[in-house]
Image: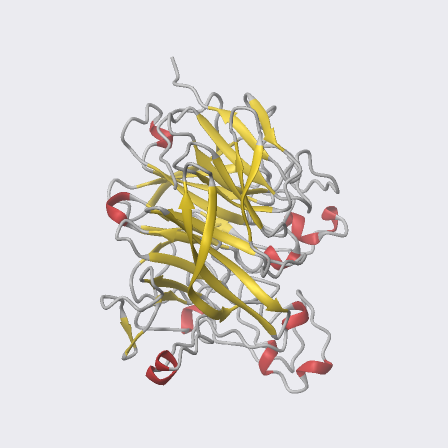
Length: 476
C-alpha cells in the first residue's frame, strides 16, 4: 500500500529544470514547465544527501516497492522472479513468494507492479518466450499476514501485450477497489523494433473484447474489476466499452491517486517532454503524434514502421531518411478527446542539439529529461513544509533524484518550480514513505548509468540493487 508524506525534508532545492546522466536509450524521456519553454539549464549541485542509510542491498533488479500492512518493505525483484519482505529496521529479508513462470531478462520485462488489497496481493508480470511468445498477466495471491507469505495464485487476466521494451507495468488498487494497470507502447517504431507499428492510438472492437483479444491494449491505462472483467462504468470509447481507461501513452511507469481520487501518471518522453498527466476516463494523451505539449517543438512523428523496405533500413535515433513517412506537425494533429499534460520535463525548442559531444558516447545523458520511473502523492494534511503539501513525487532514473511537483488545491494543474531531493549517483526506481511519515524509502536499479552532475557519466552506481532510507524532519 502507498502511504502519504506529511513531513519536511532536512534540505531541499528548487530547480526549474535538470539535466544529468540518463537511462539506457529504451527508457529515455523529457520535462518542462507549463510556462516558458526554453532549453533546460545545467542542474545545480546538491551536495551530500541528508541522513541516508542503506537498508538492504544485493536485490535482483528491484522494480516495485510497497509498504506492507505488516510494516515491512515489500520489494518486487524484476529479474529475481520474487517478492521479498525487508525489515526496515535492520534490512533482514524473507521471500514472500517466488513466481517461476516470470519471463526475466535484461530488458523491461519480468516481475513488474504489485498492489495490496484486502487479504490479497495482485501481481503483474511478463511470461512466455520473448519476443513473439511473451505476454503479460495479472495474478491474485492470497496473503497470509502472520506468515508473511503469498500463495494460491489465481489468474485475473492474461495474454496482455508484453515485450522486452516499454512494458510500463505499474499496478494500483484504486480507492474504488478497481485495478489500474499501465501498458506502454512496447518500444515499437525504434531500435530493434523499428518495423513494429506503434498502436497507442488503436482501440479494441466489440469482437476483440468478446474474444479476449487484448492486442490493442498497448499504450494504454487499463481499469479492471478484481476478477479481470470489464467494469460496467468504464468509458465507452468510439462505441466500445473495454478495459481501456485512457490511451495514447508511450511508457507510463508511474501511477498515483491524488486529491479527490484523481489519477496521475508520469511518462517517458522520446528525447525530451517527459509527461506528468492527470488521467481522465476515455481521454487520449496523443502519442505518437504528440510528445509533451501540442506545440510542434523538437518532435515530429517519424513512422519507421510504415517505411518501404523498413527491414533493410538502419534505424537512426537522430537522422530520419526521406523514405520514412512523417506524421503531421503536432499543432496540425487533432483528436476530440486529446488532453495535454499538466507538466513536461522538459520542453525544448526546435533546433535543440540532442547530440552534444560533451556527453561523450552516451548522448542521451544530456537529453532534457529525467526518466520518471514511479509516482507518489503527498497530501496537504499534516505537511508542515508547504512545498511537500498536495504534491506529486516522481523518481528519476537519470539523475538519482526525487522530484516534487506542487499541485493546485483541486489537483487540476501543476504549479511553480520543481523541488529536487536526495540526489545520489543511482537510478531511482520507486519510492514509498513510512507510516509515521519520518522516512522516505527509495529502491535503486541494479545497473545502468547515473550521476549527480549535469551531463556527467558514470559506469558504476553507488548503491545498485538497494533500498535507501532518507530521514525527514519537521523544520524548526
